[in-house]
Image 1 (cartoon, rainbow, N blue to C red):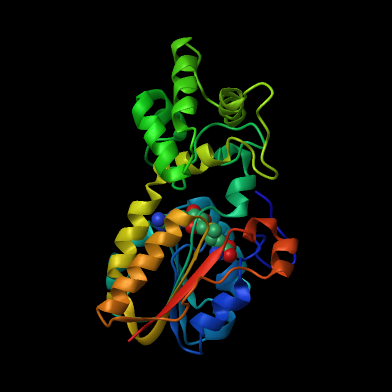
Image 2: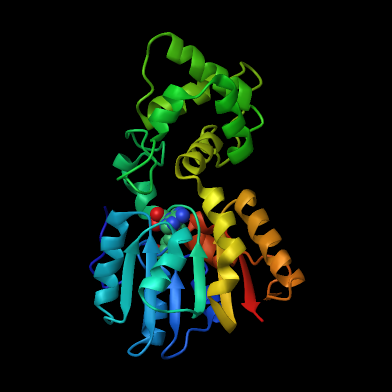
Length: 306
Ligand SMILES: C[S@@+](CC[C@H](N)C(=O)[O-])C[C@H]1O[C@@H](n2cnc3c(N)ncnc32)[C@H](O)[C@@H]1O
């Protein structure tokens, strides 16, 4: 893990100004950061709500929560951190005897700390085990999935969660590799199999900026962590936790997530529970993308509880 010594979270929070301007944290507010990561957004929120407010930070990843705690504790002790799936927010609020909160943030996907940590297996840039679990204490790893799934199941995952048009060809190549008795254990091993499967002599051109294995890695990560199920379930119930006039902000990083957010907000608006504040999703400014290329696919949507 990479630490910064300047008192700031080492994760560059995406669309920080936009997130803060929609959530509008005020002194004394209770705000939930449901995907706190290394606390990039939360450090700013905490400064605005302390000393009487409460920041509730949730993350599935125990290691990253420790980092968030280090940065938050430099600011104030008006926070509580929970290692959990954000779908368990009702349980957490019950425990704290809180019924409504003044703001909820979801900044989806993985943090750059997780991506850069080779032993977590989220990225094929460096060799690492094919793990990809956000919560390393439970569940199947990406390696387990590749060992156990049928060719069709694998192709479906690559197609559904990665929107990978050549999903069948890639799944076939993985099964062929399995048949040779070789175990697919590392990120770079998988990336090479995908690259080879997509290679067509004379035709193949690598799309600028996108490695051929990008979509397969995204798909496996989503499958390993059941990410869309958590998001859909959470969004369907989020209105229960929001006080009237409070806001939910969601930053998503691919169209599958954004579609779920758009549809949940529309349903909330149709039921007169939410007012949509962003007719179209906001994207980061060019200046932010220049500084942080990982922000380039971010889409922000916000809604207010009626
Ligand atoms: C993009 S990062 C958040 C970065 C954070 N906003 C910051 O500025 O440091 C997303 C975080 O959400 C966590 N996460 C993803 N899905 C989750 C879920 N269902 N429940 C809890 N945490 C989740 C990941 O482990 C990761 O740390």
